[in-house]
Length: 348
View (tube, rainbow, N blue to C red):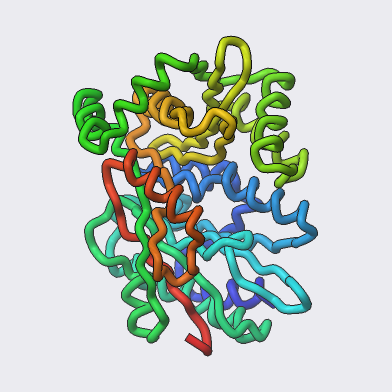
């Protein structure tokens, strides 16, 4: 029924067509790369990874993500999925909040508003049909100053809106400016200490044995294997397919840490890290992030998303550990942006 709901919304819209992401993956990533700011969280590699992670947990999502096209020109991408968990249907983006629409640069505001309303109505009608009481969407930094139409419509509909903090590093700043920022946050001292203690290797491709060693370190640090072998294999492939890179840290020849970063044409994100806890409180991850900044400068990628910076009182009740990790991310971040969380549905 979901397909009929979507198709109905596009009837009578001349020259305006849609395709599902699953049948237009090349167009999806090409559109993302065409933007001045194309968040990597919208990329095929990130969405496919989340899908694989869910399948390993025996949760199967129907990907309804849409790319809307006008006369062969993509206008917008919109990512959401439908799944059934514990005998109840759910709307999400592979278990995470639905991603707000991402529009073509300089698209007319009237078209943006019209398409946003279509997407919003599609979700409401799907929720009504599958008896979904509420669902969550999110809208992070997209390098625009104005309030989005997604935000405006959610406000008009009376949805609950929560604001969180999200940290980014502006890689387009000069090296001198970035070092000055890190000095101000008293982080550069730890970076210099780490450089004296460890050796960093930036890798844009890895061997199977190298990746297995990093995987074993992650298991050792976590106390158990937190993800399936297939998700590790997926990340291994992303690195060797030039969609991510990894930084390994060594004490002489012993691997003591590592961090992986996914990237699109304009943005990157800190995807995974593991560091030998026996060496704490000596700085380790500081060096990985510093080397990542240098590598992203070489790649001419302007933004590195460090992630959420939680606070007590946030809607999702973050743990003390999550808050502590957030404070570390904050020290590296040159910019703290609002990330809006919208709770939609009957009981909002």
